[in-house]
Amino acid sequence: MRYHLLACDYDETLATGGRVAEDTVHALERLSRAGVKLVLVTGRELDDLFRVFPHPRLFSLIVAENGAVLYDPHQRTHETLAPPPPAELAGRLREEGVTPLGVGHVIVATREPYDVNVLAAVRELGLELQVIYNKGAVMVLPSGVNKATGLAAAAGRLGLSMRSAVGVGDAENDHAFLAAVECGVAVANALPTLKERCDLTLSRERGDGVVELAGMMLSGKLDAIPVPRRHVLLGHRDGREVRLPPYGVGLLVSGPSGSGKSTVTAALLERLLDGGYQCVVIDPEGDYAEHPGLTVLGDPDRVPGVEQVLELLEQPDMSLAVNLIGMPLRDRPGYFAELLPRLAALRARVGHPHWLVVDEAHHLMPAELREGPLSQAGDIGSIALITVHPEAVSPAARALVTAVVAVGADLTEPLAAFARAQNLDPPLIQPASSGDIALWELDERAARRFDLKLAQVERTRHRRKYAAGTMSKDKSFYFTGPEERLNLRARNLHTFVELARGVDDDTWLHHLRRGDYSRWIRESLGDDELADEVARVEGRDADAPDRTRERIARLVAERYTLPAEPTDYDPDHR
Image 1: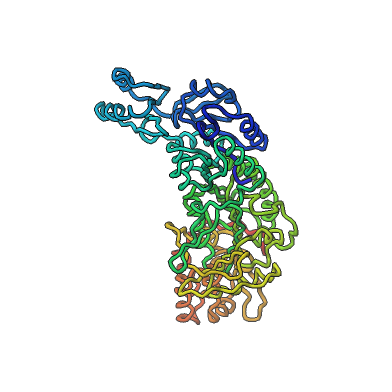
Image 2: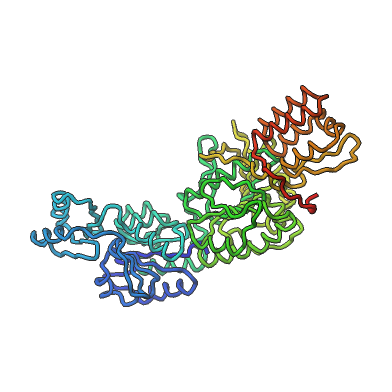
């Protein structure tokens, strides 16, 4: 289920003439039994609401007074979310014969045409208050208080995300909270201006419309309805935006080392986080330690526990990078196999996380794993698999993929590699004047080139991993020597410098003269600037082993922070 919170306006949405029909109550009860949290969002004062509505305990929380009061019907406690206006406002309006005049915990309310009196009193008393209209009703509240702010407080109290919420309403004062939820819905009797701005208009009016909406939520029909204003921007093609929906996406990002997969992922993450979506990045090699918006768990000396990850993710505004750099390569698939179903269970219970990003997916979900805990991407919200080798990813993981982003100079290869693995025809690649990235949505015959909209803040790429982490075997450097008598693996830059100082001169010069050092740095680390510097050393001092060793070591140290002490060497990584 995509939505785990339903926020309902009361008058002329749930209720007709102030009363709620039994069919509407029963529909809400069914939603509640399915695990959906219900929040009533009304402009009424609480006492006024209780006089006409006998089922307040149907709702987990009630937002009253147009966002100013939060009421718990089970504990029978309330909390004011804003200070009340000074008493002289209501006193002056009474003196002027304004009627009706309601004075709640925070709200002061009347009806037109007394808005003239209200506006004059607010101005002349010098008060920082706002006047909100609702089908003839006139409500006075502190600035910035509305149904959206009240609902956000309710969602926070329930531990739910507004990105997992749907709201339904009918009138002017519903605009704010319907814009704030993931999907805003209007009943058929709603004002035309509200219908224009909502994501969905129901075919039925008032309580019958809410019954209709409840049926759509229970059947899963609402999950499949696009909400274009929430789609995530990837970039542009020929002046048009290229976007992905935020839910139900299985995205594969593939291309050779150094081709730009990290740049695509950083841009996607930035947009998701800015949009309020909770993201979990499984980071096997410490690449995301400095990504803004992510709280990092784990470091080279400590592996985060599964329970610690889940506990933090209970907070919907907490996004995580689960750093596995301190875990041996052989143990990482098992750790992820334990974590993934627990994340899916959390998602099923509370509606978040919204996106799971799996870097180096071919290591964490290798081809040998034939089955997985997810039947579709929606089981985890959405998932992004980042890999050099799509064919080396588990078939169960590849089955989740709904779209492929290919990066690099040759876009045909990553697309063809995935197509071969899935027994699909490779897509055509639409021509474009620019763009070295292509998006293939699997229900389309062609892949679209586009220009990526870069992240505002570029992270420092791979530095912690390359300095002291454990690079995969295919990215490591191997000192073999001229006759291949050796097979010494440098699993990171620190190990590379240490081994360089210990190998014999013939071995060092053999690789130096072939340009192996600069080639490794360029192709495996993706650091063209350092590779160019090292290549100059290789071409200039091909007969000076000691001088070139120290020069290359110094270049590495200037660009990367190496540990003061040698890191522990794990023989299982040899």
